[in-house]
Length: 308
Image (tube, rainbow, N blue to C red; front, side, top):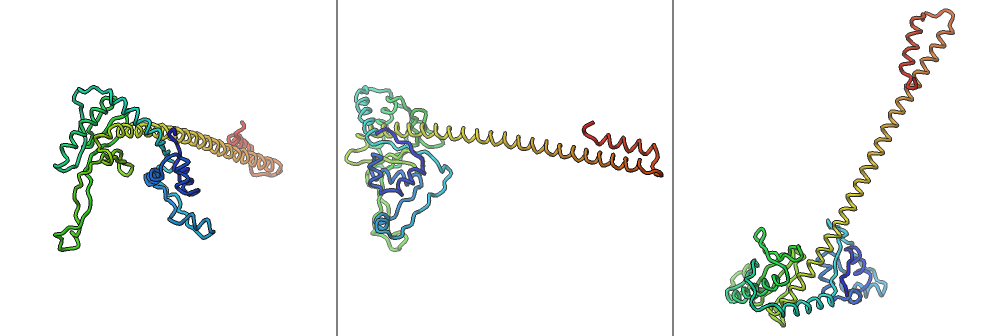
């Protein structure tokens, strides 16, 4: 399956229209991947038993989609077949990588114990060489490590997994449990709540380099598409602002002309009122208003008249 591009609203409508298992099958991804996408984008899911209650006509609660800054943010769903295909392609490419490759530049943040430190360093060197061979690089910025893939910066760090166990030396509830390192390494990539990880499993990290490179390249592709979508939205928003500005300017100009027109109409009305008054004065046989006053009054009427 090729990458699927949907909006946050569309994904929300999907998970509230049919069960996750059916939707995941339609999207050609695993249910766990679908749940991860929903979690990453703040999309609420139906509670356990929601569909059974709906089937038997019982009342159910539908949680509204919360408003986030990027309310219509585009979501790129990478088809698992697509990623697997990319991984195989990269694996073949890396197999052709020369044994002797110049020492790669860069470093990756890590938080591991002394027991796994040597292994973590060897893995980092292997990953750096593979990234370099694929035309990518790793930089350090503001104290954090980033893989630069297709000009996209993807945050990277390596950690050793911890697990909580009962503290046998505990005498108080505050230290009833303690964290211990497990020897399992994992690579986390991405920013904050959107970060994803690949860890030791059936294969150690060292043997998952093609998978890691494929994941980073897929992440970069998704970000490139997302950036294009954001730019498209921003450009449309700027055009709308400009259209609104022009419309407002036009409305203001119309109001200004209307105001001027009304002012001229009032002046015309006042000028004619004065002329009617002058005529009434002229019709009086014994008026106190002399020729000088009549001439002045007619002059004032003409000054007020905007048609002259």
